[in-house]
Length: 292
Length: 244
Image (tube, rainbow over the protein chains, first blue to last red):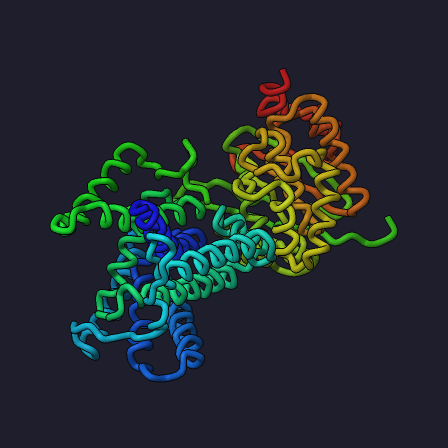
């Protein structure tokens, strides 16, 4: 029964990281850009929650969504001019944006954690037999599942989704065939903002304080998941994000309490082994090269 | 012909890459309802010419006119929306999309609504003999089918002018003769002008109204299939070597 408990918790954390990973994967798909500032969407959203403590959730949630999506669209504008630049240039640019936002946050709110305090009821738990399940666990799994399915439907059933997949597949050809790449890229950033918002709100019960590095810590883990899964395709990237969250939670639960400081060592040891054995990505088909 | 057809017209096109002349003063006209063959040995400048006509590259000097508009500096997608589209030597289908989606996305790109795009895809899959593969991922198609899909995708933009870059490579005899019928159909029923780059000499001689021969970046000859077949310099430069 203990292991069922571990498993459920691990699925919940996996769902959260899969949302962040999907956001990273969407942007990488349409722009071939690893957005290292993805985490700062969560961080800025976190400070928005802190600043609106005590307001009605019906104001706070739309406001956070608006702030995060707005910031994502600003990032898109900043990166747009570099779209034909070398990948390393774009990478450094996203790192600069990340650093800038974290510095501003540090200046404004200091490095000390600030309480985000939303949906506190979600931290409560109920028991089923020997299982002790927090509401946030179920909500994470449900919201994660719904959003992953929603994005999947969006990509496969809508005009803009189809065009997004074409751009991800071969941007030059898609553009030459008349696909409006700007519109597609803007949509991808907006979508990744929505995913970041959902991830943030669901992270709050287990990480209730926001610091300037709040988002970076999450995004780096998700990014590692994306690479482990295989970043050339959306599904493996997302599943990679899920796996890293899942493994994170599992390893944490399985380590004896006194040994939990070794969580990162064990986790990233596993990552290194996976990458050595399957450098193309854990869930990537063999010989699948730079195609989404 | 009842209507006066428009034309795609390039005047004295030249393209120099770092001092190397890839194309030198080439003038060529493609009228609607006409198939022009573009042949020449490897390195003759055929791909350069197609790139310049389609907006994938821009000339060092010379101009490109599309139905009276100077499009020399237009981007590729602007040309596509104005009715000038190209295909690619290696097909370049979107690998993760199905055959049907590949065609639909091109129709959407030129402003078609979803339903129109879907109908166009059905027709074109049928026309190209790809109906059995409509839901197959393009990456899984055989090479010849991928090129046909590339042609279908180009036709989905409802072009007035189509530049076909070696569309028949990888097709067998039967498929080539079926493809010749498709080219004629596009010319006759869609009233399109077609520029066909092709190494398959029988196909070119069989389907083209006129043929333009390039050699070392310059026009070597221009004329009807019969004239080209009997042109001594062409035989030397190209036909003799390939057709035997």
